[in-house]
Image 1 (spheres, rainbow, N blue to C red):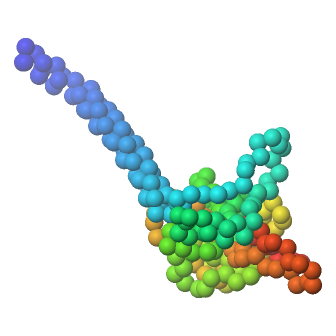
Image 2: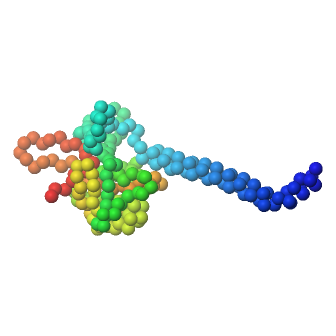
Image 3: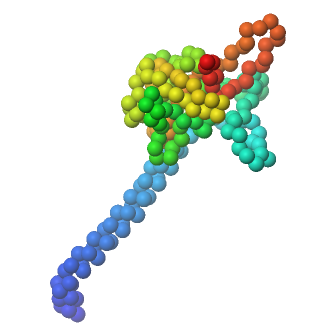
Length: 221
């Protein structure tokens, strides 16, 4: 029986090699898929564990509108101070971010991921849980300055001093890159643009309007 089996194998060497190759490739494919999914899961787990807030307060989502407006709902910036006085609250942090934007360079080439990851515009207000830290340049001051994450800057060849155009729902505006921010954890693939969104009081004699947190303040003109 053994001799007959060996004789059959030797008579069909090509079939034996192809069968072995199919088994090896199948095992490699399954192992690679498991490694990839586990790596992605661990990346986001570490990112959320190190940056997510314990409690998030946000505007109520409008589920009645039939046609999305693209506008970003906000809450009053003064709400952060009110929440800070609540028992058990150690600190509050105002966070404004939008993903329905496009950022392009002077050649109108998109500055962002081409793999489906979002391009996010958010405020620059670093805390001990921020996923990035400023590694070159300086923080943005005013609506005409911005930071860019280091991975996007390297891939798209953007340097400090370059001008980018942000296309957003309120309109388009230009920003000058004044600094580079580097991820302290694994970059999930998103492109991040950090803007100065600190509320500014109008210069008038009437009572000041309570400031509201907003994704950005587009420059005039």
